[in-house]
Length: 504
Image 1 (cartoon, rainbow, N blue to C red):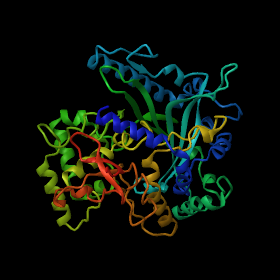
Image 2 (cartoon, rainbow, N blue to C red):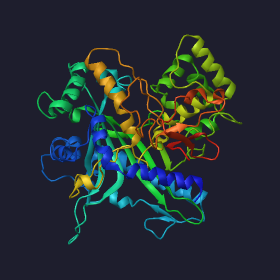
Image 3 (cartoon, rainbow, N blue to C red):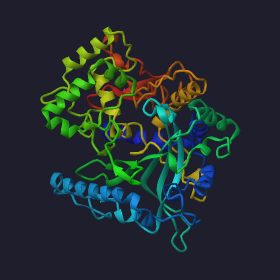
Image 4 (cartoon, rainbow, N blue to C red):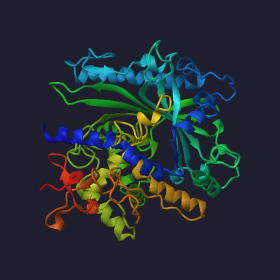
């Protein structure tokens, strides 16, 4: 087995094996910032947080709305039309780029296309899989105190006659993004944060003084979808590959409908590389010291004119640079958006102006942030397939035996930072919204992740330190491994790898 497949196999084992041992730690990490308990989610899905009740609050029926009826709603007409269009374009690109590889629904094809009929079926619906507090995004939505996200998983509703298996979940999530504070509400961000943190202790979620009492359909801001559009098993001509389609739809309150919209920070690589004027404009904008500092912090909001309205995130991408990554070709080389000289000069100018960069200290750091600031680049990093939050299948007979860990290492590694921001908001202090790279969380002095696979423990992402030390890239000098472990490169050209036991 070659090095790349071997490391992919190890990575899969890290995500899927020994999950029970991590469950307690994960539950502690998510306290106050996420609701992932299957029994709680089952109860909430039976109430006002069932998707059709959120989207059609006047509907009083107890029976969940099947997707055949859901996508017939006028408010979702543009969502269905846009997704159908993406399927058509995906297949057209496939026929052009891979004419010798077949694509279609079923295992007889080289590429197994997602069966679109299941999305609009009378036998499927979206089931509540998790509720995530994203008040750490208050920097992007100060008036609404950040966001609360209701994450739903596409699921078959009924078992076949005589079938003892659990209703199978399908590879798609729908993220209903809500404003943490609704328009016109006088409640302070500090009080919302207090309720979330208190609920992690006293368990009051939906009570009149609980955090969930503050949100309903009037808080809706947008829908984000993530769909496994196609999968190619390993064959004689390729390694296995799975493609995920990402989309976003903002809610137009006047039209009472969701409208296809540019995805936040999803850089439109193809359009930038094809347009000299747009390329120069984007380079000048991002390398401006003010924007470069926000880019370093992970809080940059790229103007929509540089963004795409959809993305395909192929997985796995490995550790070496690849054209599967959204930033590939944007830095260095003929026709690139950014030259090494321009990036180095911009970093120097920014630091000379008094800014202290926390993550980007080199060209390589700039490239890595350019990748993980995008939706697709982040989903390719430390995810479970192409998802960061699949959620626990509470419809299974024994949920704890199906998916013990509901989210990716990236999700859990970021919980301490999110909770620190909640604490700061609760206490009326100025939060530090900065975040590390998707591969490696920003610790901020905390030791809670020490020795874990989220930071420097077995399986953590790391950077092979140079000998002499001066050859170590400044952006990744802290990506080391705990005592007894060593960083083993996982690619042919990259010094990025994973922490494993030292070879004897």
